[in-house]
Length: 110
Figure 1 (tube, rainbow, N blue to C red):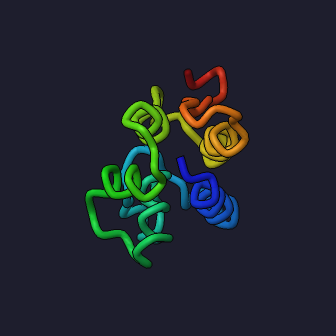
Figure 2: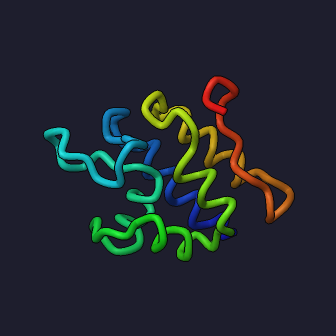
Figure 3: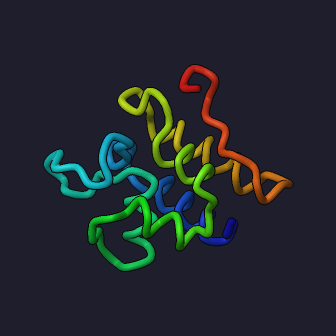
């Protein structure tokens, strides 16, 4: 996994208003046109805009395994997730000592 890029995504999400993180979709039409999931934000950072196929594109760019990408981009209870939850999951990967670690979401989400 590429921790430097994960940190870039984490920092970008943290800098946005909470309503700009929406784990239900890579791109939301919630009025602002800029609410993205983690994969959507990764693609915006990489390409400068959302272009579709964010899950596969972001998995490769972040150098994640299939398991890591599935757990990070498609966690349980997606409709309940907040920006703070997404930051916890990203921090768990960034700070992991094992490159094969899976992201850890807050207990209420898992």
